[in-house]
Length: 256
Image (cartoon, rainbow, N blue to C red; front, side, top):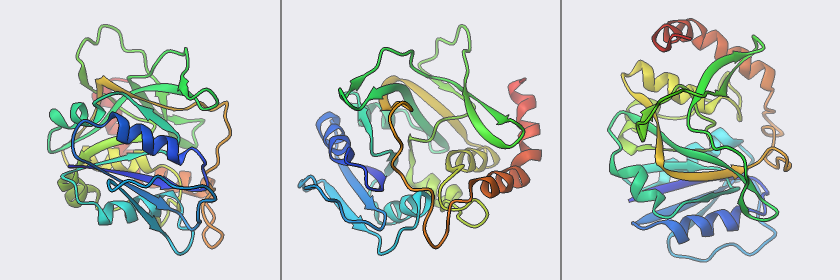
């Protein structure tokens, strides 16, 4: 079974995202919506495959993901944002060839949330990990020529959709750390660094896709919590402090 975790904060597109997951899944699936310290002001999807967790206080995205995974039952876990659509059979494609030590992301398109359709913008398969402006780790579109492999290693991902075996989460990731990073940012980079250090790989699967809300549309997720603001600059500095030296070694492998 695939357990899909959706950290949610006041986004009215949650229902549409859940419906896309349920409509396009071809195997056994559970969808866990983690309501991060709020109650929706809209009627939620009523389906036996969907569970809702209400966090008594606003913990931020990292805490919401941790909470959802903690109650998940699937052999495979997937995380997605609450403003995405998915291709038919995404669940079977992403789990079919997934190895024990892989984190996998699908091909990424861009979503027009007003029309609820894929935009006419080139998709993203590969991302290069860079230190943006000398201040933070960031994924950057990477046009790698002559890469015909449909499941291939990549260096970074946006983090809005990924899948791994639950056993890899329990053994290597364990939880998304909030100390230092804060409640919101750099979660995908933390997971990828941990995966690499444990001998695993980040893979992109071009046989399936998802579409994520384009940046032209407003972001609704909170910037942390009232008790624990995101303090993004501090989180970026912390990530660099922890991983910058290791990143320098990784760059040699990727020859960038």
